[in-house]
Length: 144
Ligand code: MC0
Image 1: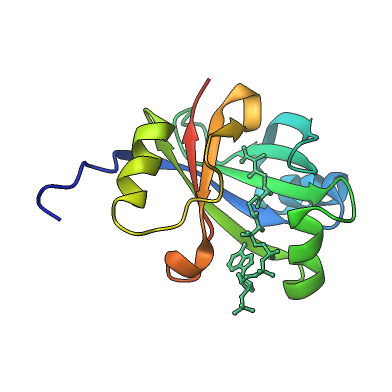
Image 2: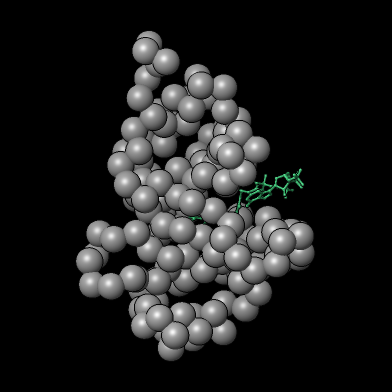
């Protein structure tokens, strides 16, 4: 490992939870845990409707991302069909998603995309296959 480039994780960006109904879930987290919805969008390419929830008052703290399927053939619909609602992904902030992806490829891990795709708020994202990361779908996020 000594000669491999650093992966360059900066912090936990968000934790993603798959939910069947976005507005019901936003209401549940607000009323139950007091979390504020700070962003909502539809990502057509990923086939998701998503909401970012702030946990506490620290603007730099990791967020909770609620992910609902926007179409039946999406990754989230498949996840819900197989596993039901629950933790779907763990996302890390990186400075340069291409460099971090290359550093992980150099360690033998499979990245899902050859080139980064568009994520929340115009970020650039890629994913490590869960089978190469101990059963966890790992997302890399380069903020916009
Ligand atoms: C599947 N597996 C998982 C998993 N999804 N394990 C842990 N966490 C997950 N989320 C496991 C299955 O149980 C199976 O295990 C094995 O991986 C292969 O399953 P598969 O049926 O071949 O694969 P698929 O078709 O379910 O696809 C899995 C894959 C897919 C990770 C490739 O979900 C994908 O492309 N994900 C990346 C995109 C994504 O998740 N988009 C939604 C979030 P067994 O043991 O049964 O073989 S969009 C997002 O996050 C954006 C908006 C953002 O944050 O900016």
